[in-house]
Each structure stands twice: as C-alpha cells, then as structure tokens.
Image (cartoon, rainbow, N blue to C red; front, side, top):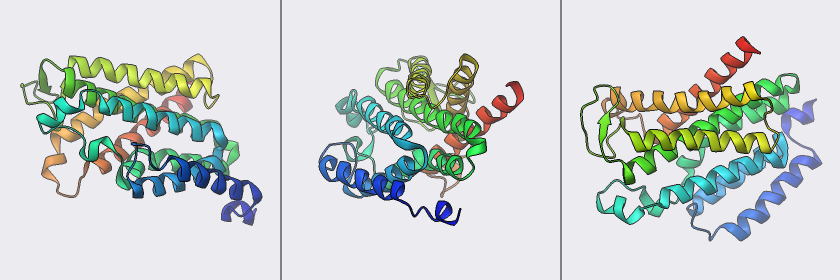
Length: 248
C-alpha cells in the first residue's frame, strides 16, 4: 500500500521511460514549447502510471486535435491580434491549465480504485470541456460572423473575453461530442447515459467559462486564461459526477 502511494514500482518506471522516449522523439513537433514538452512528459507519466495507455492516449488525441484546430486560419487570427501566442504551441501553463483536473482525477482513480468509475466520468468530462472550449474559441474567432458578449448579447470584437458566436457555439458542441466519442472508443467511459452526461457537462462548462470570462476575468489581475481553463475543467468534472451520482 505504501508503494502505491509513493508510486514506486515497475509499472511507474515503465510509464516514465515510455514517456521519456516519446518526448525525446516528439519534441521537435510544433505542438509544445521545449518546457511544454517536459511538463507534458510529467503529465504523461502520471496518466500512464495511474490509468494506463488508454487514458494517456485520450489526452494525446486531445492535444493533437486541439492544436490542429488552433492552427485553422491562424494567419487571419494573427493579423487581428487574437491568435494564440507562439504559433499555437502550448507551454507548461497551458498543459496544466488544461489537464490538472483530469490528472488529479486519474491519480485519485489509481489510489482509490473502488471509485474509479466516478473519477473516470469526471476525467472524461474535463477533457470534453477543454476540447469544446478550444473548438468554440478558435472556430468562433476565425469564422464567427457576429460575436456578442454572453451576458448582455451586445456585439463585441472577436477574441473578447466572454464573447460567443453561433459558429463557435456549434463548434463547441462538436468538440465536446468528439472528445466524448474518443473516451467511449478507448473504454474510459461506457453506456449511453454516461456518454450523454460527459457530453452535456463538457459543453455546459464551456458556457459557464464564457460567463466567467465576461463577468470577472478582466476585473481580477491574477485570473489568467490558464486558471480559468482549470476552473472550467473542474466545473465539468463536478457537474458530471453530480449527474452520474444522481441519475445512475
């Protein structure tokens, strides 16, 4: 039991070396900064060690698809000053802003396997929320014809905190649905009702994230985008676990 809490066994050593190899060969890919790759290696080790290769793979798919969506119309967004910095490459703050909640739930699932089903619902929802947010934000900034503030419905420039568009909102639905599908195919979650909970929670958290951005993000200096992302994924996990425990 002590070794389980200290993560000192062959499984965790294998997880470390597998991620070391992937990071060594993948660090030149345009997904992450150099420091971002290091932190991704730490995250990957924790995920592989806690919930195995399928949980690790689900996050790799999230990173890959999220990066591709970020690069859609990047030059156009850059010309307007609303593109992601560093050419869309994620740094350590982005890695943990997106994955801290999911990683924590994966570790809890490892430490308390009797509750693993509940924790995996939260895990799946946290990444459904983040991919939903990425789809909504990046597609909305590039293709949104009319952007308005979610709290007042007044027209605002694309990229404004709390701004939404019809195109972005539809894309957010697609992002949450896609990530839910990934979680089903990798057997992280199963069943129609659980899938609907994950999909709904992921999208609802994206809407709530827009409210947070519109109401308070610009008024609080320390409330960074990465912290808001972490709040969003945590909300998704809490909402999904609440519905899972209430309905099933």
